[in-house]
Amino acid sequence: MTKARKIAIGKAALTFVLFYLRQYLQIIPIYLFQIDVEHATANDTVLVNLFLNLMLAIALFILYHKELKQEFQKFKGNFKENFDAGLRYWLMGLTIMVVTNVLISMFTPLQNSSNEMTVQALIATSPILMLLTAGVLAPIVEELTFRKAMRGIFTNKWVFFIVSSFVFGLMHVIGSSNWYEYFYIISYGGLGFSFAYAYDKTDTIFTPITIHMLHNTLLILLSFI
View 1: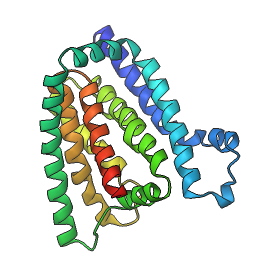
View 2: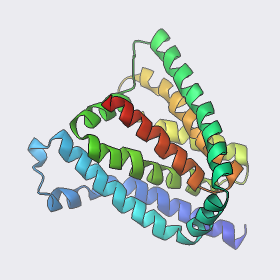
View 3: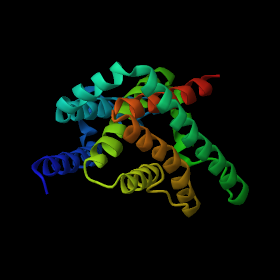
View 4: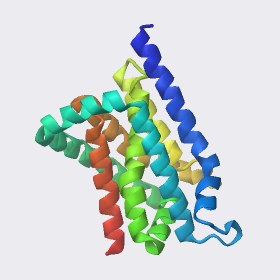
């Protein structure tokens, strides 16, 4: 194993640790914003998530700053080609997501995932904060975690595509008490696959970050309507 690969795996391990441990840092924004935990509102929840995602995004940018600088130059230098490619792959993932959601609603008692219903409720309560959290920060954190970090682990691109999309899909349903919810791994995973594919094809993490932001922002704006 080369030194570069060992470093990539080490960074990936640290990324996953940071991603997991962020839930234990809620005490910081709770203290800073003087949130009454026993009477916390939906707005309080969004504010805590905004703070945690911001802190994690900063930490990951510091961890990958040299690579991100190079990949940003690559993205900016071929912006039209990278954006067009990302858009095509996003439409592919969106198609998988829509078709899967329709099939799930047809053959199971579910009409929507718990994750989606929770997000919709938070958007209704705090639309501007959710635009910042889900529309901007979450895509940055998730792409650096599930695409940037994972690509450094796997040398085979198809293993990277499959594992990245599966873990991404699992993250959106894990903890659910309704086993039907786990069908949504395919739905979210299809979208995650398109992000991973876009990263591999354009060789810059800013392509999937951009299309992920576009996807989330469009959904939030549609919720406004």
